[in-house]
Length: 170
Image (tube, rainbow, N blue to C red; front, side):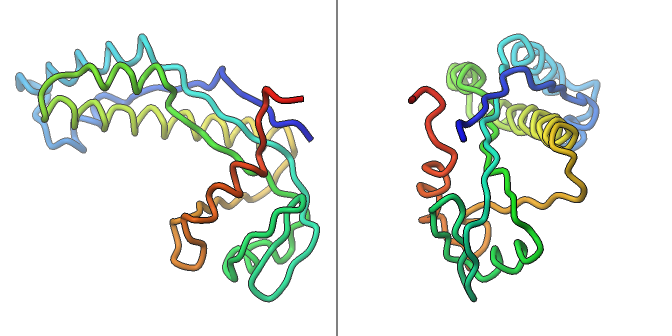
C-alpha cells in the first residue's frame, strides 16, 4: 500500500500557554519579541504527515514483523498483542518552518523559535491523530517511537522509514 501525505494539517499556538512555558511576563519586551516570532511562524508553517496502513505478518517473543519488516522490541510486541493493523507515520512541522527558524538571529531568539516549532508540531500532530482516528474508525490509539525506549533503539528508525515508503515512487 502506497503512503499517504497529509499537507493540510491544522495547527495553532496558544500564545499565553507558550509564554507561560517560557516563563515570560506577557507585558515584557521578551514576550513582545516572542509574539512577533509567533506571527512570523504562523505565516510560513506548513506541517505535514506521511503514513500508511500496514499489517502485522508475525509476532515473536521480542519482535514484530510488519509488511515484511522485522522490528525487534519486546515492548512493541506486547503493545501489539491484540493488534493486526498499524499506521506507521511521520509528522513534521515542515521544511518551511525549519528554514524560517534557521534565519532567526540570537541564541535566545533561536530557542524561542524552536519552542514555537514544538508547539506547532504538537497541534499538527493532534490534528493528524484526529483525522487518522476518524478516517479509519480507530478506538484507543497508542504511539511509540524508535529511540524513545531502550527496548526499541533509534537504530530501528531506518526500517520504519522504509516501511512507510517513498510516496513519490511507483
